[in-house]
Image (cartoon, rainbow, N blue to C red):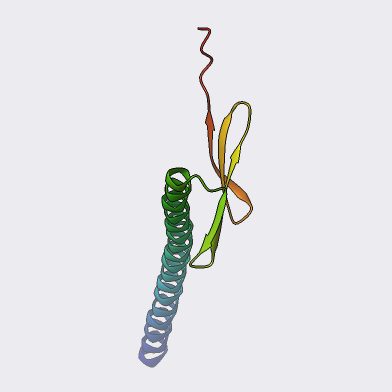
Length: 101
């Protein structure tokens, strides 16, 4: 009977170790996926910042579009204001305030 109890204890310890390793693996994968998503968002924000810097240059030089460092930025002037587009998507929409108010 003593050897049977010893085997059961070893089996429980092995099971606890496997469960702990599974939990550690799950937590690590969640952390890594969060970091990957965060880096993707950071890269997108950096691209938007670069597009806004290029848009400022376009405003100062009175140009309509530019392509630099693989980034295409366009200024679109409308009746309501100004739109800044980068890579085909709207980055910033500036509307003129109604002067009648």
